[in-house]
Length: 201
Image (cartoon, rainbow, N blue to C red; front, side):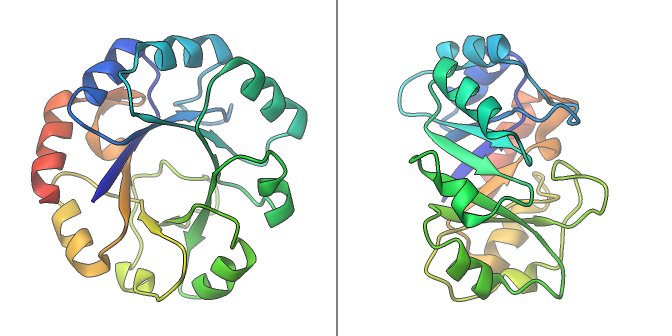
């Protein structure tokens, strides 16, 4: 089971988390997020990471020129699109990408998987009318039990005390956690991460 921790804002914090054996870290390039970082902060974080950590840049309805600017400066491995981006907009950077879906009972995950078939995976998150991710809310995990060709990354409301049940119910390829392992917005609690990892097994 893979794990991505999203929303780092501090290089030492990211390094400490990465040394625990996580698979990916998320960097938020979305100004309305409390976990938003600029290019210089992102560089500091990326340069502090040990080998073999996938560096994911998260964008929400971002201008293509801004994404290009980030890619020119920050060595990212994967893009994560958390807004209303079309399949063509996601694929135009010729990089691996994850498409996030904010799931409700009306979300046709299978159709979305077909539409975004070029994605490396679909991230299923809770729907909030006002916020694109990072809400700490979870959705009805039974909705994520779908047979699609893309790997499913489960997000939304995951925490040390919920991740075990979520994994049992959904059997996702990976889990993605942010607020559930924080002591403050953008500050990850290393003890909470250790407990989260222990409860994934």
